[in-house]
Image 1 (spheres, helix red, strand yellow):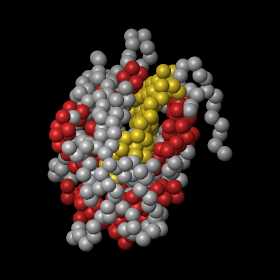
Image 2: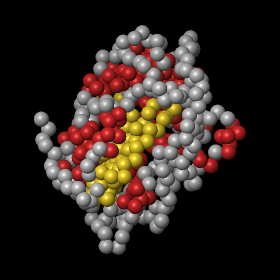
Image 3: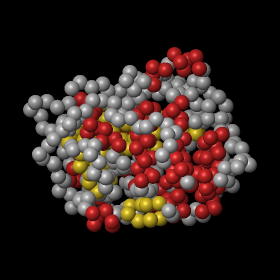
Image 4: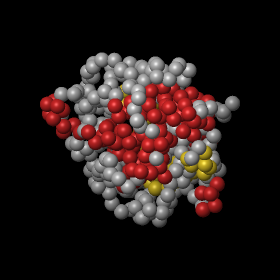
Length: 424
């Protein structure tokens, strides 16, 4: 089956003109979008969020449970590509000694409760929740990002997974698969591939719509993935810096895990916020609250918490050089995608994108409670931060962006790599 692939990295311009927005509306259609217009429009510096609102932190804390059965934004779409049923008598297995089967007894040992949320017990580095609320957030986030990017996959992925009559079965690896939204879409869009998703907790595979060509492994990527070497045609990771101690080493593992002419794709952000002009907003955890935009200050706390837990907060900034300078990779494409986490008067996308972005940020603020309070942030300070971030999210006219740094590349067939040296 021939499928269309879209370049997810074309930049759509900021433009508050309703007339031009109408003219460019076709850029937002998933069925026809291949890119957008380049450029930005300067509209002043950031303004401080106002104070004295009547919103209570309890409103935020209970928002997920109150909204669980209400429709605030479109239900995440199913795959935009046709899919077929797939039946395989053979499931490929990893010989990794760190691989854990998803038995009932294991499920009971994989979770712990902390600050009102459920976390994994396998890694001390990754401190975001692994509960129903977080899975719901990640599912909706995947759909939202697909609309913002203009597609789910980089253009070379289709060629890498094209199946010839005499070729071995195509295989895909998703590292830190989270809710499994991305890898499940791959399995539906490319039903003759075989796929593995790796995460710290299992994904529920009891759903009748769970792809039969997908297997989940419970593992800690910090322990290495040597058992995956020379196995996959596509290796993907997205927003997993929270749990990775040495991201450059993980890149080396990814390169060695992909077959010749296969594709790797990595997407991360740097835990900082930027203006409309793509200038860094300075913020830290020691200045008085309110001296910087609240969202920027909140992310400064997140950055500090991730670093204290052992996560590699410099990864996003180095992706371009790590991948672009790798001797075994070619056809490297790098792009910055600017996500309006505080939409303000941003007018790049359809209105429902901003609604979903606000929902995602609200849920994300709650997800960070274990990380921040586990790093010494008092509950009072956490509540103040969230309270004002919510106000800024809904009331500020000045947008704030996070910079999602994205890169994909193709594995050169003419370069042989030796084993990685052991971790010291």
